[in-house]
Image (tube, rainbow, N blue to C red; front, side, top):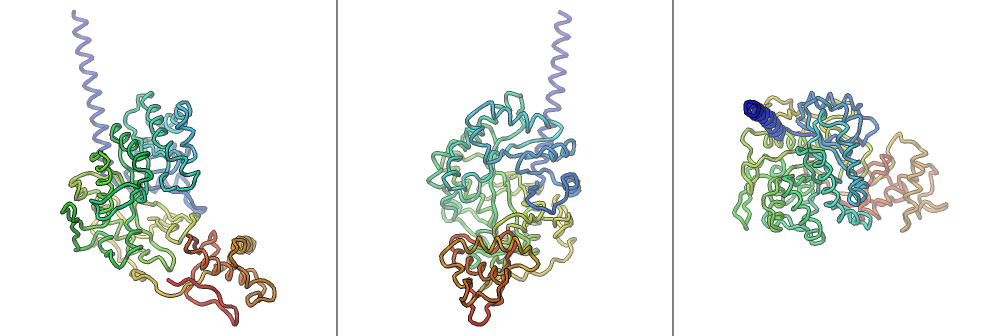
Length: 475
């Protein structure tokens, strides 16, 4: 009897201790959710080492970091740093994981168990903006997304790991309608087949709907009708949703609530939101209005202040809700393709120095920051643009880019053939500049840009000479 009683007391005491430590873990996680996270992209050839980057994250007081893979070196370096970590299943791994539990188990063994719990992995994101890929190959992944998430969750539960959320980050293009927010509706091609099972999974596992939300894009696409200050959290403008009467004071809240209403329409009104990516570009091409240091600093500082407030404001549809947020990105990444803004979302230069000052804790007063350089491009450029070879580039690479542009057909390089008006002077730089301008003018409407792997740049100065007239783009 005595031993039995003693055992009960010991068991009760152990349970109490376990409950205490569990409560501490829950409290620690809740505190971290209020802290701003950073996206650590590594698509550059001039970035600091992984060790230096982790030290930078610690010095910036980042609460969490989001990776676009499960890099072993970085995960080892993050051990015992108290930084919460989000890792990612690559898009090309999804189908195999969805098809086989053993494959899922192996992924968790290799990418989680090897580092956990010393490295505080708190989220596994399956894929990246999977539903934005509309090619035949991309669409094949759609129906495997949720099955892969389920298998990863099963693997975690088999290891008795309960504090790692499984989700997937999606772009705003999952919505068919987003304005006004109460009209938020998912695309018809994914609503029933993907979104319903996804929301069911997120709801049943108490995970988050991870969203990449960039107010820069809707503003830059419609700067006449959307106030820049409304996008930067510093407007006195108030917009009332005619469907709900909810009042909005910034663009991000509108975007987030459009998702809330879209989820509600499918029967899932309570799935929590997390912003997997947001930010503002610090530079861009001539035709990318508003991409400058002043706007980037203003947006991200105000974002931090909003998301780290001791009393969270949430959104009009979810007042007071806590929204874990990751800023994109830690660095400017020079290997990213596409328009100029793609390479200029960083808080830091590739050498690790600040592009502008920012306090991720949200405690620094606006008046304590250094004066920002004035914005020179908030008004969209109107006029002609040409695409020419950038100075001091590798001529062998330039020749390859010239060949690529000319091989696209549609008469792109007809004027460069011997005897034609643009054949001379016979130089790679001259021919490439004509080819780039011609290619961009002919294919811009199909998504072409003036980049050519960093070998090209936009100009407002007409490069034409004599009878050789370079094609232009009119903005």
